[in-house]
Image (cartoon, one colour):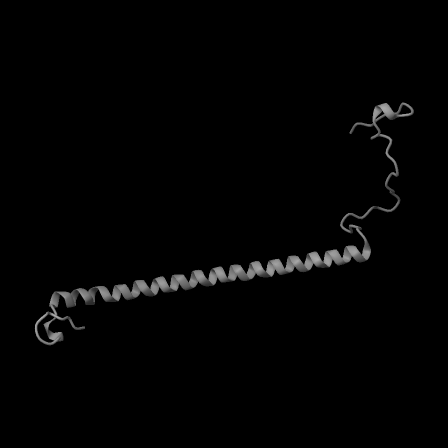
Length: 113
C-alpha cells in the first residue's frame, strides 16, 4: 500500500507505522464481515427461491386439479361422489313442512327438530 505524502515520489516505506497497524487490524475483520454478509444474502436468496418454486408447484397442482374436476363434471355431470346417497333412501320430491301456513290446504303437524 502506498500513500502520497506530498513531497517527492511515492515511497511505501514512508507510510506511518500506526496507520499500517490499524489497517492490519481492520482489514481482516472487514473481510470476515463481508464474507458473512455475502453468505447470509446467499442463504436468504436460496430460501426465497425455494419458496417461490414451492408456490409455483402448488399453483400448477391446483390448476391441474381444477381442470380435471371441470372435465369430470362435464363428462359425468354434477354428481358428488364424496356424499353418496345410501340405497333405499330417496330424496323427497316435494316437502310439505316448508310450505307457508297461509297456503296449506289442510292442517299438518310440523316437526321441530
